Length: 94
Image 1: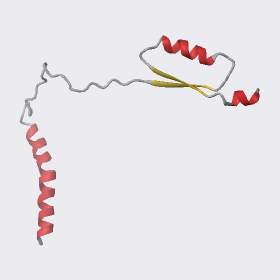
Image 2: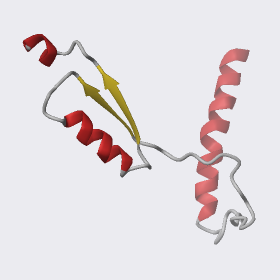
Image 3: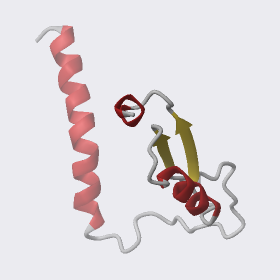
Image 4: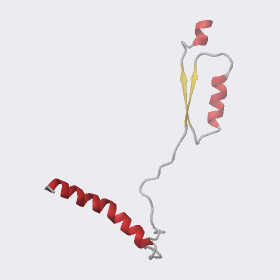
């Protein structure tokens, strides 16, 4: 057996053997890890997902843009972006 094959066999034995040994011993151990949550722990970064709504005003005359603006004012927890496109499909029909 050459050196590379022996090294590969040793790495495979360590990779697969350690978890198998742990699961075999886990049956006899009541609490394998003594990890308890720290009540004083404070995360350094807090990620708050925010929903972004994009409203495109393409020069429609049905008042949708104004209704969307009023709705956005009542929902400050959302990011509402108004995009005005004066050359929209509705503008071309006029």
